[in-house]
Image (tube, rainbow, N blue to C red):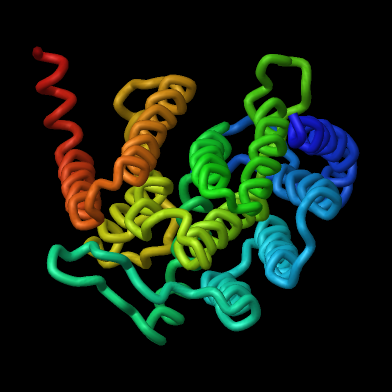
Length: 347
């Protein structure tokens, strides 16, 4: 109950912020317009990320234990939010986005002093230590997580639901480990629920629709990877590095698979297309609501496997091998999806 009031407060503040920012977004042109890849109707304000950040900033500044690491997180989050707003407004080039993401990642690595020093015992025989190579690996991980959640934000509610699964998992793991950082994912859960009410227009169809925009998806990706690195590198480790793979399994696999397919076709790995997992579900005849439910359930299953493996002390190499098998099966299924669907319909 101690954290119920902050949870409700951040939820309410997000809803209030959305109502306040809605007319401003329309005036300044911070809206998403339909095009050949976007089939929504009308100009939709891209204010979800801004509302989430403002509400979490206000509440966390009161209830969170103030320290240098937390303050550096707020600074890096503000930078990535600003980058996202500029991208939403002006459609920045890939190079500019990557440079800005590297700078943001450097705050975690060189400012807070947290970076991956080990990938754990993902090999059967020894611990895979990274040493100073971990600096480079961590920067790549930050860029990867930011873009994974940015890329998966393709249909209403998807980025929000997948991040809810991850934040809930992180809150559980940090809380059971007695680590005070569990408050941050808890606040994000409240803020994202507030956002989803407007994005999905459920349970109130009368609310005005909004999107989180690149600002929101990149903020979520940064926050999640920040918590993942802290959880792995804390003085008392919260979870093993391999567990992190399961917590962001769907966004990570979708990004890796689609970038591989793009490169294989001779395209830029960052070139937008309509070959993401949710697009494939839609072309297979599923409605957007059905697609959202199915992908969200898959994410819950993966996160549950990761948490169960952590709590049951399953060897890290077994968990890593399991994730590789899942990813290979996932990639194979996408490559043969139409044959699989044809077989299922005949069956």
